[in-house]
Image (cartoon, rainbow, N blue to C red; front, side, top):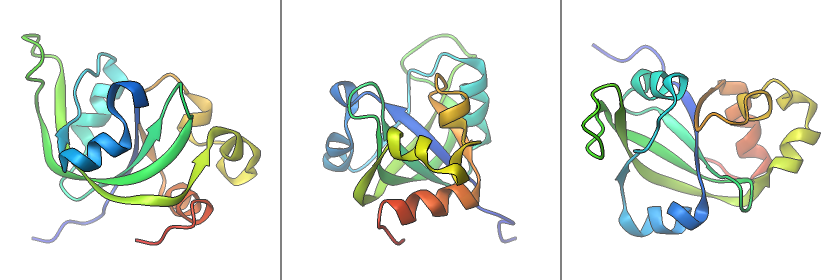
Length: 142
């Protein structure tokens, strides 16, 4: 049975902890360390083939690439607490031009993006419209 729809997400990482370049070198990773219930629920909602914008937080503050979900949620291997989960991601494509938080905030069509409204969450859903707009701003086609 074919999947009805792809969903879109934004995942945040501080580049000094795990940068896009490290992610590309590794070829894949599990997205661990999420300790917020809402962000965890977003990880649990991710499905195989969903796409995620990769955002450098704190330092850089910009969308730098697109990743793909390659394994749906399973228990976080970095903790014994069964409440926390991870998903597997692999890098799909870097943005030709990173899109800064400043650019995002200046773009009226992105004013309701969770990154702007709920900036503390490390994993957030992104509408298809916002996803496509961010790719255009980053001069990137998939």
